[in-house]
Image 1 (cartoon, rainbow, N blue to C red):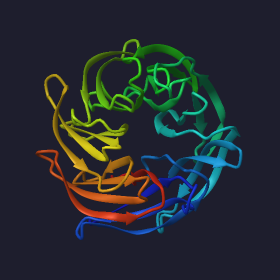
Image 2 (spheres, rainbow, N blue to C red):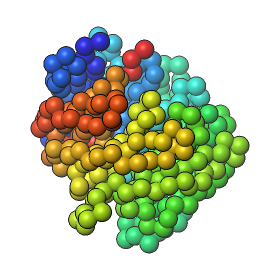
Image 3 (cartoon, rainbow, N blue to C red):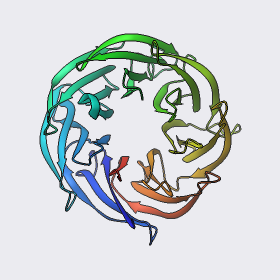
Image 4 (cartoon, one colour):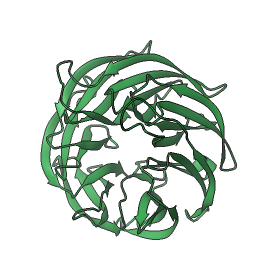
Length: 349
């Protein structure tokens, strides 16, 4: 396939209208056809169903926040609102879906909550099933209370895993018919500020990006009780870098050979090789994101390319990816998108 299509979630505090669509042309090696796909407030994080029929977005609607469901037009990739579920207060910062469970999970940074929603056959969202509120704090000035930053299902479908930046915790919940019940808690080094999580394809290892300590923490996952054990923590910024840096996104190549982690401040993507025996990491290189404050990035469906979203410079950067070395090479920069946060490609069957 020569072209892959995707969507960009943004902040709408400036010029952005909402969710944008785009195309990656793998022959010309460029991003183009960027245009608005849906107008809504602060769709900062997106998740697309495996069958490419539905897109779920966090949403801010006046003084309310929540999650919205959209249908995807297979012809022009436009988005049509199905419905939304919102409540008073700030919107979530993360949304994920599990189609086997007909489940949508959101993480709310400002409220310190994890919320679960069941979905209907048409993709619409039912009213919230569970609201789990985290309690606690940490030593950093931004850890004055709980700040949930990620919520997603474990690969075995048994638990919802929630990462809390404010309490330095990874909390697992059992899921029964959309309802959550607390199962296990893993505590990170105080002040590290865990942010996002990605699982190894073997389902036994998780990699967590920390925002404050700028590390990737390697965890062993116990499917019996939903618990985690730390195996390694490795820095994502150079030893001599002393300026402000905040870790952001983390992604894994599907061949489980490389982990990629983004740095806001150092404005780079750190590349790590995964040891096939221990699953621990060895640093490979840093690649500049050629823009300011990379909030997220994504590997394209072929995994031959990487797209980075630079929030503060309102730009995307495109890279080719060497599958053998894991290294990235810049192809295109300064691709204009207002306040981009999250980039997601449609799935390829």
